[in-house]
Structure formats: C-alpha cells, structure tokens
Length: 193
Image (cartoon, rainbow, N blue to C red; front, top):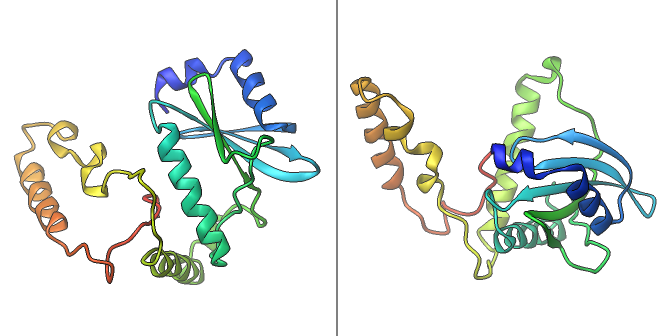
C-alpha cells in the first residue's frame, strides 16, 4: 500500500468510514492495496474495503462492483456485493472509496491445501469467471489492460545493467501484447488470479 494511503487512514477517517457503512464489531484485517475491515452490519458478517484514491477512483471501484454483482447474479463463486446504508455500492469518504462485500464462508488456505485438488478447483473457478465475463457488458468505466500495468514496465523495475533480463522481458511483453483480444479468448478477470 502506498505510504500516503496508510498515513491518510487516521483514526478520525477510519471512524468516518465505519460510520458510512454502519459497521459494528470491527476487526482490522490489514490489507495490501486497501484497508480491509471485518465486521457485522444488521447481524450479517461483512468485509469493508477502504481503497485510497491513489489506487482506484470512484468510477473504477463502481465498475468493479458492478462486475462482481453481475457475476454473483450468474451464480459465480464470488462474494455478494452489499450495498451501503444509502443504497450505493460505494461512496467516497475523504480520500477513500468505501465498499462492502458479504464475508465468504470457509477458511484460510493452509500449507496442506497447497496441492492438485486446490489448483484444479481454482482453475475451475477462474475458467467459469472467464466464460461468464465473455458475456458481460461493461459500462463506461474501464480499467487498463494488464499489459499496461506499471508493474510490467521492466525498464523501470529491472536495473539497466541486467541487459539479458531486459531483452527477455521485452520479447515476452511483445509476445503477450500480440495475443488475440477477441471475446473467444480475452475477457475480464481479477489480475491476482
């Protein structure tokens, strides 16, 4: 998480975020790109995400939630988007975009789970998301293509004296960018998958 996002999530801002969601019995789960809080709302276990505007703006979070909501309606293995008390899927509170999801059932994956059955199920779920997303009609908000991700800009991430690594990265990126992008093979997917 960007340092600015950590510093901006003061106790005062956190209180405003929690009030915007009507969350009780709160546990801070930490987070990587967003602040993640577990709690209850009207007796239901939920997860609140507070995303700093340096990472996503309101339109991108709204688009992501629209996609998740649509996937849930198609019976995909995704968490249900829980509207905030005012009925919105997300709101901006100070520098944070606040959204909520139903807490998933299950448990954390353990080292013992790290085997073929897990990967087979993971592949099935990702395949289903891909299959469904081919039919999704996105709104006007668009996220950048994975090949445009700043993390894949190897010129800035790999030292210039590592010419071999730079050359291989450039070749692989050219190959990746050259892949077909029609609906039979290219659709929305969560980049962490």
